Length: 219
Ligand code: G5P
Ligand code: MG
Image (cartoon, rainbow, N blue to C red; front, top):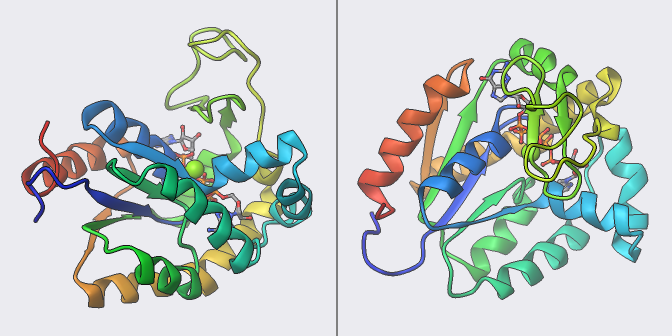
């Protein structure tokens, strides 16, 4: 456990649509920690048309994985900017190679694994809308925006993600099974993994919150 004033190094993992972004938002509004989502970083690079964005666009839209070297460089640079702060990584690492590189540089305190069934995921993703500026996520059933089609905070338009088409979601789930699920073993062996299973974020979240408050974060 880590209840000293040392910054907390946390990771959240789970299949596409398992609620990593949603739970991360709640963690950030409860504890003092900065959220770093690899998907949000990529989507903003794509939007800005940077070199990395141009390389990543076609891969992300097809539900593939961006090459390890590209991701490692991109995320490690962002992490450097947060060196004195507690952080919560979401979506990185996503392969054993990425996890090894991260581990060379940084010890982790806790890995939260969201274990949500695939049927639940498919339904959720089809109803997801996001605010491209902030990455804030909505769902037409679960947390609809106050004004249809508009972000609660800015009033700007919401969009659907280019990779949320059903055939792309299937490809992302396949990538998860093959490339990312092995990380469950990796972090179990390391002794940092804690899994939370269920179909509803509102049921999972209080358990995550208790676990983090008891072992890692001062509130
Ligand atoms: P991302 O952006 O990391 P994924 O696929 O890992 O994408 P995603 O889709 O962002 O994960 P999430 O964050 O786990 O899902 O889930 P979420 O957005 O919080 O919730 C999903 C929906 O369900 C939302 O609409 C939410 O409101 C709703 N919801 C939540 N809880 C409930 C509930 O209890 N009930 C209901 N009804 N709804 C709920 O990565 C994208 C791509 O970037 C590349 C890859 O191409 C990847 O596919 N990439 C990388 N490539 C290589 N290496 C890396 N490290 C990479 N990182 C990203
Ligand atoms: Mg996400």
